[in-house]
Length: 279
Image (cartoon, rainbow, N blue to C red; front, side):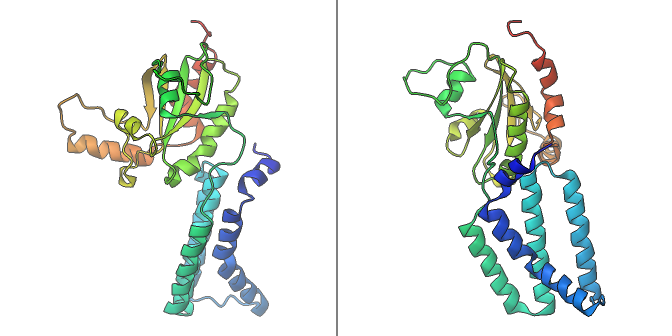
């Protein structure tokens, strides 16, 4: 279970504090008004909106994969609720200025990346090819990690800095890297495909936000890809993807569970953990 100290380290950031206050201000003020009058004087639309907000927050508490995702989604829900309530109760201009403030705060205080403990290596394209794909580099550049002959397996996350899905998933990936940090033949790494676009093309990962490809996890064994998440229908060279396969791929990208148990099961991490080092 995540300690309070770690949660404080990860969430005690201007983004979470300022945006939460901005999103929840109307909710708090409205509840105080109702408490002072000691009567539930809610219009039918407002009452339904409160119930919907409560339901969505409870539901997100159940299905969220990380504290970062839960916090950012609650902030989004409360902001949207406040925006709609201001429009219904006060008028257009108040809601307009609320949107302006929303944009300003989002620009000044964007959501930060995971700030907790991690054993995930940040690779460049050259270090990825040398350490993961086991291809010798012609240059003598210094890489972030030292080559380790005992490492047979790599789990690599292909991500982009603009992707909210990658941002929220990084906490899960970091937790897995800590859980398996004592396994000498397994390492975790990430590569920014926005910076190293050649790798995105090489591994068939689209950077288009509408593709829902990010994040993509790939399991490598001795330099060869053996599994990936999300799992996609692969067509032979020269063939076109059918509409059925394209629809399946879209559903898979959208629907794959990003919980740790899914990754452990799909990549057989427990079997890898107990595998002999020099099998």
